[in-house]
Image (cartoon, rainbow, N blue to C red; front, side):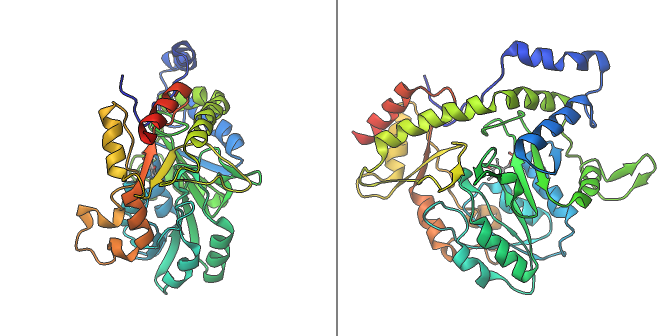
Length: 366
Ligand SMILES: *Cc1c(COP(=O)(O)O)cnc(C)c1O
């Protein structure tokens, strides 16, 4: 049987049926119905955030918050290329200009020692990524942003449920985007949310995600359609009931991987971050080439029907769609370029058995 890099968790079939039953009576399927309202309230409490807006997916959540913040047209947004396509595309599709900062080689988040040197009069915002659920150096980023009067929007797609010193990942910066895609730790099949501190963003976000419609005869924005529907919200309500168990089970697989792979020459694991309560979203491994080349390991696992993922490869600043675009140059971010060649994320999901983890480790270590 093929072992995929991830496997979506689902509630019991009956639990979901029970949750969506009343929708068959009410026939209210989208546009801020009862499930949407209930899910939104549950999430606010779980993520400890004063303001939260739900979306059809994480990507549109990111595009919509960039629009709602009214950043200056063509402004520069400092970000990293070691991320999913969505982060960079959201900036470009919003009419803004990504400026790529390198990552650090400990947790693969933005290198805060280089961040300030990239700020120009055109800089409008900083958009760092909590890669693999590793939290960025949020204190350093906050003080740089404050000094220069910049907005900070986190791509927190990987960081659902992560806390540092008890503080939720939803509480850093001006806004944080979460993805509830089927492959994430917590999901609504497709879905996403933005959490933010300034309640004045709530009205524009609600309007922009619904064609800019503010009232029946009042259209205030050139909005699109990015609403979460009732069936998605119902899935979220069910999955949120089981999230602690989900994270705990992932943690058990994570622990086994570490027991087997820590300290092996040629293999570098992400160190747990001090004071951080993790969500075990991914199990990233750097193969430095001493004994194992990343691509060889990936091929070997594939022969055994085990799918590992080169996540993230290629870097977003080397995508074909950006070739020839000024500033898109993987050599400008050498650490990211190096790690992209060496990184492999191993299978990790709640019902991954310890036996399977052992089998994967046996194949790698042999
Ligand atoms: C999944 C993901 C997104 C996009 O989220 P969707 O819900 O799939 O639209 C954005 N950024 C990162 C880093 C992601 O992993």
